[in-house]
Structures are given as structure tokens and as C-alpha cells.
Length: 77
Image (tube, rainbow, N blue to C red; front, side):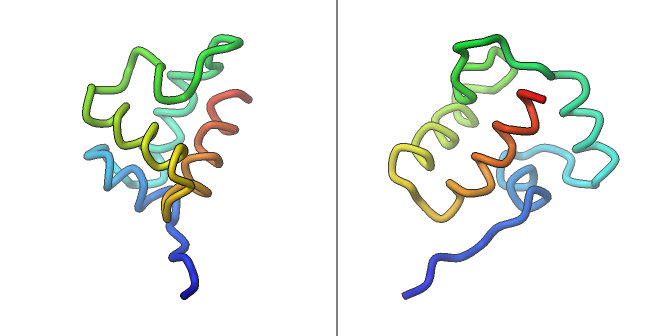
């Protein structure tokens, strides 16, 4: 079975955030860059539920892992 591919917009929606492109761009600009050595899920701007979701998806290499990695890279730029 092939893993489902999710978009950045779908990830923001899953996290309960505004998922319009302009809002995503503002979020990334506002929260970038993440401090060196800070894991994405440990960033202070996530709620406990959001952080748990991000951590779980990466640890389990789940369906959302690829787009979570993409967000991680965008927040480090």
C-alpha cells in the first residue's frame, strides 16, 4: 500500500491553524528561524497537542512525516 502524500496546507489544517497560503507564509516568517538544536516539535509556539502530533508523525515515519519535514526545513530558512 502506498503512503498518502499530504500538502503543507493540509498539515496546517490538521494542526488547527489557518491553512490559506498567505497565512502559512506569515506563520513561517513570524516563527523563523528555529533556534539551532531545537527540534520542530519542541518549538515554543506549538500547543501540547500540536507538538505531540508533530513528534509522533516523525518518530513513526507516518503519513504526515514528509510534509512535517518540509515545514521543519521552511522554519529553519
